[in-house]
Length: 474
Image (cartoon, rainbow, N blue to C red; front, side, top):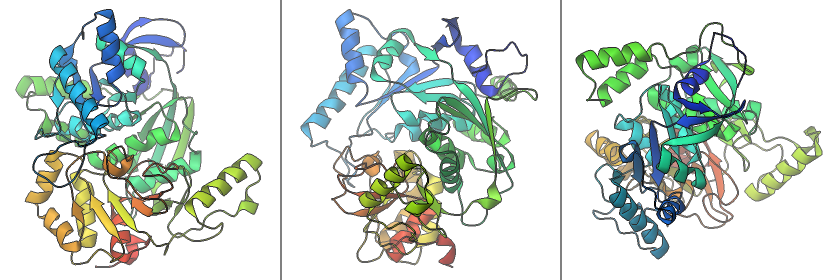
C-alpha cells in the first residue's frame, strides 16, 4: 500500500486506517477485526493454544463458528457425521464454542451452511467492516464494501485472544470493467476471464477494487462470486464500493437497523468509496462486451478459455517453465493442445460451493434444465449454500425442477468443492463444476475439474458434455 501522505485515499486505505489499533512499522499494523469466522478444520489448534496459556476469547460475540467443510450432504432429516476424525473435529468445535460463549452453527442447525453464504445472508456483513476467517475465500465480503481475507491457524489464536491481527499492508489495484455482460455470461465468466488475462499470480500482494459500469450492474450475489474468486489471482482482498443495490440488500437483511440508526448507517456507507484523486499501485481495464462463457481446461483457474476457443498449442508458448506447466496440466486433464473444450464428455456435475450456491445461481440452473433430463451417463448434484437457500429453492419450485430433471438435491455444505467429506470423485472422472479451484486432486485423486458458471454446468448436465449454454435455446 502506498505510504505517501496524500489526502486522497482508496477505499482499501480507508478501511485499514479506521481499523488500525497501532502502526508497528512502515509495512505492518495491528488491525482490529469486527468479525472473525471459524470452521471445524482451521480452529482446533487455536483453541488448544488458548487452553495451554490459560487465555480466554476476548470478544465472543464478534466471533462465529460453522461446521461446513467436513459435513455430509446426503438428503436426510438428521445429519450424522460418520467419519470418526471429522465427527471429532465437529464435536471439538462445538465444545470450544460452548466453553467460550461463541455463536455456533452445528450440523443440524436450521441456518447451517457454507460460512461465506450464511454470514452475509443473515446481515452479519456491513460495509466498512474488517472480517477475518481461516479460509482464503473470505474475500467474498468485499461485494458489500467490507475488507475480508483469510488468515492462518496461528493467527486464528491471536484473533481469538485479542480481536486483532498483525497485518502486513497490501498494495492497491483497481480493475475497471466497462459496458454490460452479454447474454449467456455471468460474473463467473468475467472473473475467469480476468484471472486468465492477469494470471493466477497477477494480483499477488494486492487488495483489488472492482469498479465500472459492468460491476455496478451486477447483482449482489454475482458480486459475491466475483470477489470470492479474486483470491485465485492472488489477491489479498477484493472490494466493491457499496451502492444503492448493496444498501437495498442490507436493508432487507439487517433488522436491527431501523429509522434513525438505518439513516445514519446509510449515510456512513455512502462515503465508503475511493476518493477521486486516489492513486493505485496497479490498474487494469476490461470491456464486459468481450466476455464469453469461460471454462477451465487445466489445473489452475487461469488456465481457462472462452467456450468458442481452443486450448493453447505448446509451440506457441515461448517460456520453457510455462510450457512445462501447461504440458503437465494437459496430461493431468487428458486433453490435447489446440483442441476445443466444447463437446468434451463429462461424467459428473457439481453445482455448489461458496462461489456459486446461492438462490440466484440455482434459479439460473433451473432455467436451463426445466423440461430437460440429465444425460444418462452423468451424475449431477446440487448442494445449496445454506439451509435458507435450500428452503427458498423448495418454496419457488426449483427443487422439483431439479429432481424431475434427475439431479440429486442435497443438504448444504462445502461438499465436493474440496472433497473433505464423502463427496469425492473417483480417479479419471471429469466434472463440470461451479467451484473456485481446479487443482490436481481437488475433487478427488486424479479427478478432472472444469470450472464454469452454474448455467454452463447445467448445460453440461443435460447434454452430457461441455456445451455453450447460449446454443441450447428454449
